[in-house]
Length: 326
Image 1 (cartoon, rainbow, N blue to C red):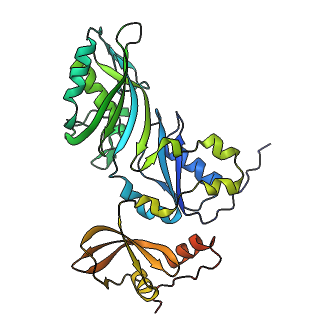
Image 2: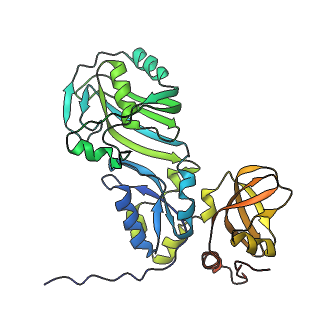
Image 3: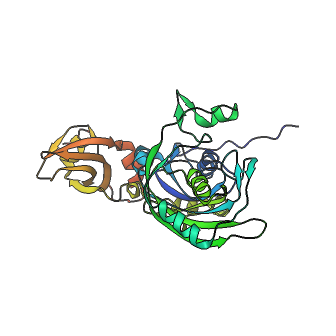
């Protein structure tokens, strides 16, 4: 007998959930699970984490999906363990070992090598990555046994701290904390460090502990989310504007707010700014993003009046802002 599937009644959900992604799930699998638990109509994430990786994965719901791209440029911080003496097909523990070498480096040599990777460095993206070439993800080529040419990229390693070091025994390793710019491949960093040490290496563990302003201590696990009543799950959502923490704030009166929501530029005595978060004053609500040039507030990504009203529904005194309101 075929089991009956429960149909989920979807609802508008707006905000950001800071998820502690579990080991073994892809970012999309984690997103779909959280979306189901929240019964959300629309969801997306701010960049993927490998199935091997755990840690901070901001998930965007409803209106927050409009600003998920803003977070892609954020710095990230990881804690990772490099298994020394072994290279694998994927540069992590999921691949097959393709080369083994003795580990003969000293603690002093480890410190010296790590110093070389501080600051701006060049990386060749790994074949097992989602980066696309000719419209096809690199990992698709890799699964077919193909290797394609990739251009090196410039990234920045802002901090590289040595947390632990075991250079002897059956599984020699070093554990690092890496604070890096966007686009940094930690698997590639691990392989490159292993080569510089003369023994090769692959990642045996990877955890993201910071991304932009978000910290692992703020995150909730899927298991904990599932155990909560629905109201408590919704309470874990951060407001949409948490994705715009460094944006200049501009607040508009009601008539200007309505015109701005219609995509009309507004004029005012604002200094030039590339990144602006625009709010309405009555009620106080995020309207969208913009930039200011020569005293003109130029709309970027805008919330719809329906989205704004849905967000304000928790405030009984709120008055809806309608596009074109005068």
